[in-house]
Image 1: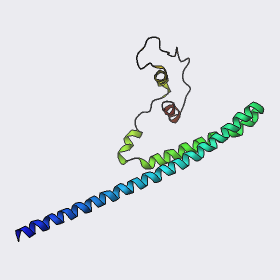
Image 2 (image 1 turned 45 degrees about the horizontal axis):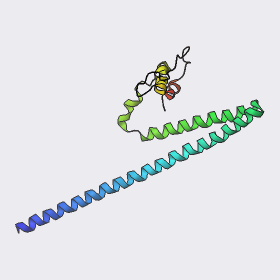
Image 3 (image 1 turned 60 degrees about the horizontal axis):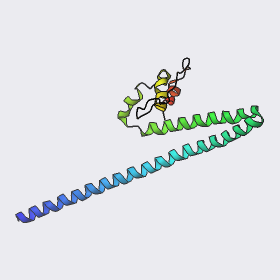
Image 4 (image 1 turned 90 degrees about the vertical axis):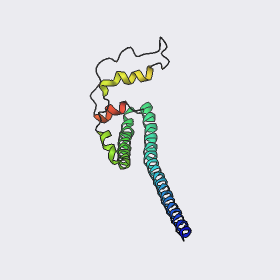
Length: 156
């Protein structure tokens, strides 16, 4: 009788383990499907707007060489399309944020006052060689820019 109790307990334990593994597999599968859905949506949003921007930039270049005043409409279209894609990206990224990510939004973003540091990252010689190209100076003061523009200057 004791053997049956031990054997039955082991069987139930194995069943629980299989059910738990099955649930974990299902969760991983659903997460993978959701990631794929988000990746497709992100691609669709970005690809569409970038295609529009590409076509309009080509039209603006063409117009600039022939009728400079005709370049204004495509350039305005580029401005609107790029603004739309940025808003849509922000919305998608906002949906992806975890509840604890809110603190990251409140961290100060680097501003244009740190422009010399940014320029240094483009010209610094990682090996420390003498005579590496360095900007001589950044004349004047950076123009006023909103937080989005100033932060964008620091992104790759």
